[in-house]
Each structure stands twice: as C-alpha cells, then as structure tokens.
Image 1 (tube, rainbow, N blue to C red):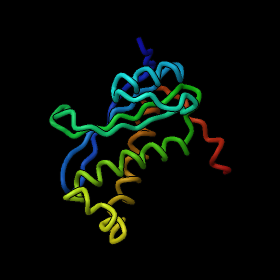
Image 2: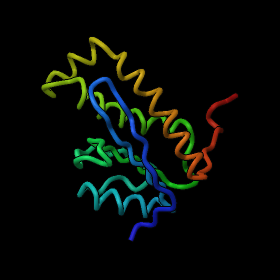
Image 3: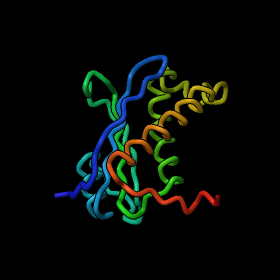
Image 4: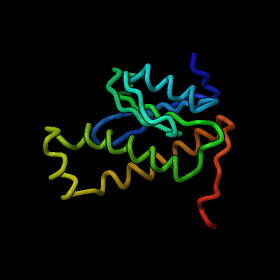
Length: 144
C-alpha cells in the first residue's frame, strides 16, 4: 500500500466553474509510482518525482472536476510545484475555456491570459497548503 505522509486539497474558482486540486505527498518515489499506476493504469518512468493527473471524479465537496498532484517528500522545490501546477492549470483551462477539445491549439495561440492568472492562484494556494501540512519546500532554485 502506498504511504501518503501528507494530503490536502485546495478549492479554486474560475470565471467558469469551481475546481479541486488534491495534493498528496508520498514517503518514497516507489509509493508515489504505485499510487499513480493504480490511479491511471499507466506505468511511467521510475525517476520521476511528481505527477499531475486530471480527471472528472465528479464533485468533491460541491467542486469539480478534480486534479491530483503527487509529490515525493524530500524532492519538493518551488520549480517542481510550479511545473506541476502548470499541468493542473492546463487541465482546468481546457475544461473551462476550450470547447470542443480539438480547438485547444488554436485557442492557446489566441489568448493565454486566463491560464496566467490561474497559474498565480494555484501556486499561492499549493504553497499555503504545504505550509499548513508542515511539508518543507526547498527554495534552493530561487537564487535569491
């Protein structure tokens, strides 16, 4: 069984709908990969230290659809969080703003402002959640 050492969710409001992003922090890469494989049915590269899945799981506390960001303790830094949030934001953006799905490329080329604002909201929300969960986030890549 996969060992999750911290778990929580953020609720995100867009102009179009409400979404949930679930964050799970695993003790090891193996735990995260096992969870990911069970969730998606896929077996991926074992060196990966994070995944983001997008899925319409129905409503979560009145919100939906949901994304799940999977992280490994000791491998979390700001660059990784922003990278995974970008995947979640892209999924949310496509659900809310791009219909039908085959219009995605054309639409992305025309207007990226909604995704830019969504990115900021997600980064702030996930960092706040990880702080509340007492999960240490490395700042080594910030070069401050």
